[in-house]
Length: 248
Length: 58
Image (tube, rainbow over all chains, first blue to last red; front, top):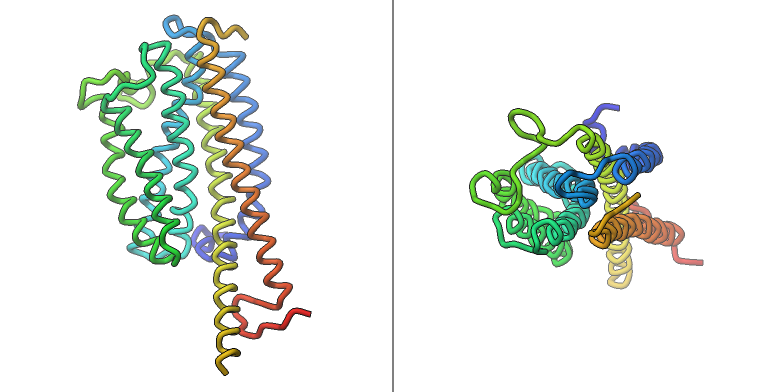
């Protein structure tokens, strides 16, 4: 099946029916490996001690929070420029998942910060810009819920998503542009990672597991949204037919 | 597995992750069941997506 075929919602539903069992199995397997590595194989850090285990959740959550907004931005272009039939379905269903991972990033960061920095929260540029992204996720979800007609909601949400995308480079480079309590990039940086392989390997294992989880949840949520729109169009059709019978 | 003096923070972080992931899974599964049930009800009443012909319920 060509990728372009998935633009058709019925073909997309058939694809999800076949793909979801495999993705679910792959996600469970990846988490079994990742959590095993994170909790039982990875050594304690020489400075952080066992609290380094929090990083195996915190870092993938942070990556996914930003990745999800990037995906929604591409979908927003699909809605506004190409009017792709699945673009606003993809954007709408990604928002709650992105919000959940961003919340997890903030919460686990706070749980790590208290013992390591001596505070749950600091208004530094990295933490504040991630909090702004979380609030924008909530705003997007509220926008989707407040406009009943999905196409109109999709266009408004697409504009807000593209405005919010300005925050992505601010989050990424905040640790370079400002003097922050949050440490600078230590994985994706020029010159390679500064993390020891014994900790980097479980981190990547958990990142793969979280990414598979995101993909599975997103596909399943997109399938649900397509079904919801079918129900809505059937209800509208029934209402119109009953109205015309009553009028005639 | 020895979690050291900051065990409560590690347990809280992993516990929150479990709750968030479980909530997302429940949201997706329950929503799927609800949409399938509504589609089934509408189809049982003869409503189809492209047909304007609606049968009266028996």
